[in-house]
Length: 216
Image 1 (cartoon, helix red, strand yellow):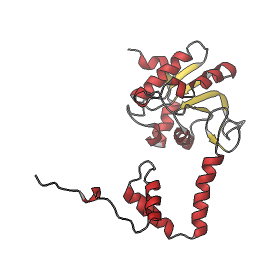
Image 2 (cartoon, one colour):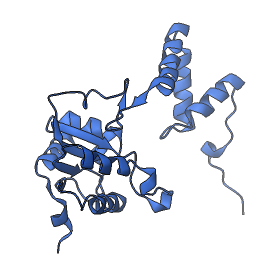
Image 3 (tube, one colour):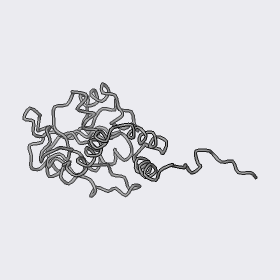
Image 4 (tube, helix red, strand yellow):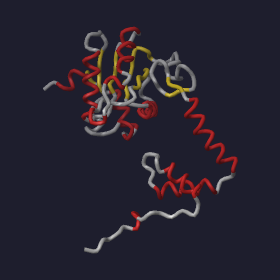
């Protein structure tokens, strides 16, 4: 049988090794295929040397100098992020999220005035991620040592998110803190970062007690 080759599967020829190397690096980014990578590289070639150097310096400075908040593990420029350092925030209310993208999404709703705790992921045995790989221990210590009255579990409504919710609930069950979960205005299986701001804001406001979420 004669083989039919897709033209996109053919090895792309580059007129320059430098161009090919740049395309290879860009294509390593999530969601960036080789065609998009080539388009980005060619775009940079149209820019001035100063503009490209500014672009490159921003990436290098980000990687070398970015820090993580010593309180909530959010990205920041100093030891403590601007949210944790803000005296106007309600420090008795802590919203637990998977990563920094969720912090940005919830902040954009303008409906939450408390603090955050960034786990750095969710429990996923298939991906080799266990509780010890996340910032769950520091959350437990934070609840025990600070005047936290309520912990809001704002993780994605996936199996992994629910597993992480339940694990945190068990770890905090010996404390007096109130544990709530965002309302299911976020559809089951949805990622928090992709929810629209109105739905996400309402889910924060209409949160429910976590223990009630799995009662039959």
